[in-house]
Image 1 (cartoon, protein in one colour):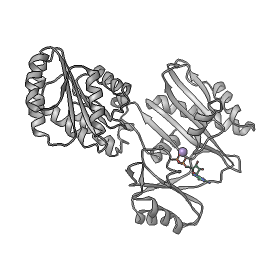
Image 2 (cartoon, rainbow, N blue to C red; image 1 turned 180 degrees about the vertical axis):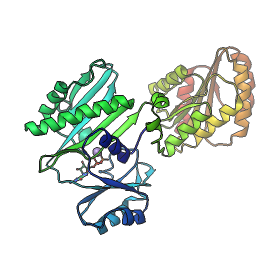
Image 3 (cartoon, protein in one colour; image 1 turned 30 degrees about the vertical axis):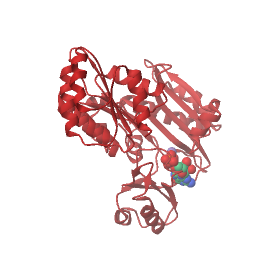
Image 4 (cartoon, protein in one colour; image 1 turned 135 degrees about the horizontal axis):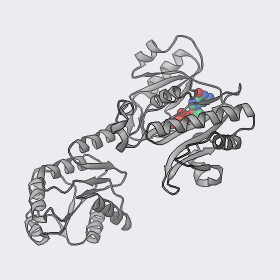
Amino acid sequence: MKIHEYQARNLFRKYGIPVPEGVVCHTVDEVKQNVSDKDKLRVVKAQVHVGGRGKAGGVKLANTKAEAVEKAGQILGMDIKGITVEKVLVADAVDIEKEFYVGLINDRNTKSVTLMASAEGGVEIEEVAKVSPEKIIKMPIDPAMGLMPWQARKIAIQLFADPKEIRQCANILVKLYQLYVDTDSSLAEINPLVLTPDKQVLAIDGKMNFDDNALYRQKEILSMREADKDELKEIEANAKGLSYIKLDGNIGCMVNGAGLAMATMDMIKLYGGEPANFLDIGGSSNPQKVVDAMNILLSDQNVKSVMINIFGGITRCDDVARGLVIALDQIKTDVPIVIRLSGTNAKEGLEIIKQTGLPVVETMREAAQTAIELSKK
Ligand code: GDP
Ligand code: MN
């Protein structure tokens, strides 16, 4: 689960990480009403669940209140990477002497939470990571010990020279780690962490993601959920008993079983395609699930072909096939579909599937290749 920057800022504040004040507004009128009349430097920031807002024009400085109102008018309704901006944060801006990056992630290689930091923070951090990865310091954290103050100082010393600044930075790192662990976070980033001319170290951006599987014990975090269009689809799919994750490719996949769904995505990738989603319809032959799944898949405008990959086990292929036939009869679409059916009672299943007139193939390999070919037409 993702949260907006303003929500991350609230969590930072709660944990004692210094953040400038700000208000969230949904309309220009709200900006007029909720922002104080005092003219001072402010920053107006799109609140969307994607990075790179600055580069996309979603972060603008304003010298006066009138200017803040004007900038909010420009940003509200703006499209940033396919998401319409519905809220802006109008925050007190600060003068910046230098921008840093600090972040925590779950690192699969070291099997631990890893602290990352760089003296080259700001909007170019991805470029830094690509071109000069040595400029990003990484420190795995022992889960039993947590981030020890000396470790935080060891990192901070590499970013700052002045002892007072080092202390502020180390403090922030320890607090960020505590927040990360307490909230079952899977990503916590401050980019940029800034040094102001009067030597204050502050967080002026915040990004946090949370482990969906831990939300059952994170009531406060869950209550912060403000899902965007794609996330709503995932939530809706889950409510219907489907595991659906949207991805950026154009080959829709509908599969029974999580392992097979992963293998299907691998197979599509192997032949040069890009999966549009992960979708596990579970072990059921319930036609409604297939209809639901297809509707969710096809509502993604990027989907140019669909690969249905079913492996019968305890669930028999002929049952699944009957479900598919009923479902495909209800779904009206021009998007080409290829079906692969194998496992228990595959022969009977394939016989039933013939009625749909859709291309049926025997192996996953063929299914992936056919789906990729069809997606290009
Ligand atoms: P992002 O592009 O989505 O990561 O948005 P950020 O909040 O990180 O803002 C992008 C950039 O805008 C920062 O790296 C800063 O250079 C600049 N910026 C953001 N807030 C302020 C501010 O309060 N003062 C100044 N001077 N620049 C800011
Ligand atoms: Mn940022």
